[in-house]
Length: 414
Ligand code: PMP
Image (cartoon, rainbow, N blue to C red):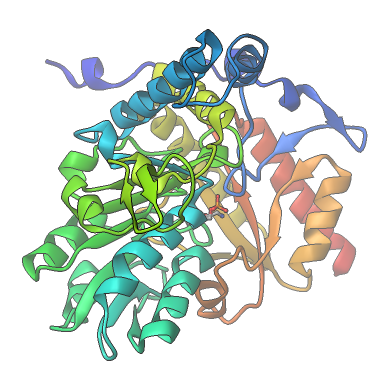
């Protein structure tokens, strides 16, 4: 009906903050302003409680026992898989593989999908802004096979042009691997368009969703990605757990990566029969409590609503951009039109590491360095940046503190 009906109610940020025990701490005598969510976000009490309850009432090994606790653990673990399936709107839980995180998910694809398929001279296409986790596994695969890594450019704002990227797809391209959101620049990539163009050429696409899953509503059926990776610890869940979504037909066609228990149906010395999906790719005892915690985290963010989260974070991004741009000598690195929830910047005369240390003295946590995306940062002629990355529990007041602290650091070095 009216536009007002479609506009989600704003988040009650103060009430939400009370759900995150860590946020009420003081650091170096100041209230914590946690602005390093791109590296790892904090866990709500619901996640901490779910992990504790699992440990106190359910823990045993999964999939193997007939006793009650093993059944409980298996039920909890498989319910978590179903929770992830719903969160990303995959067709089937057979397409949801638990891993240690985005890095392991991408390595799994590099080993099981790419290496067996590529020959010398074949190509893997990435972009200039990728995290090292979406560069190095492909470099290793190229070294092992003689394949070639090709890199689509980014422009001076840090944006990727889908048509330009598609122009680099050749007869030899075997995979396109792109970030959904850049962790160093904040750019939201036109992944839907990239996927459509790659598919038109018959090329599958892996999307590194580490920075997207916490901020954007995901619908992998609509997106049509072939592989999609993300990490629990960036989506308000535990560390050490992550997800690889894979299109079922592709996963079926791939050999296992790691061998061991759980990924087999029968083992004989003259040959082993692998388990069905998704277990074929989950060798050994998985991070059961991590999966349970991740499911609780997805419940939590889904209850808040990804649309409401995105709306508030967009306001924070605009406010931070405005406040920081007003600081003399400050340059924002990454100014794409479509950005998510972080600002990377350099300040004339102040090394990012010094800035990070000065801010920490005031209880403000930001990240400094190359953010595991050295090519992206170096593209802008700087070796490092400071990065403030926002979550739905951040406030304008925290951004005011950030801006004031950056101003005073600049004054110190003048
Ligand atoms: N890709 C991107 C875009 C990231 O931001 C990160 C984490 N900084 C990763 C991959 C790697 O994630 P993890 O360390 O959780 O495996």
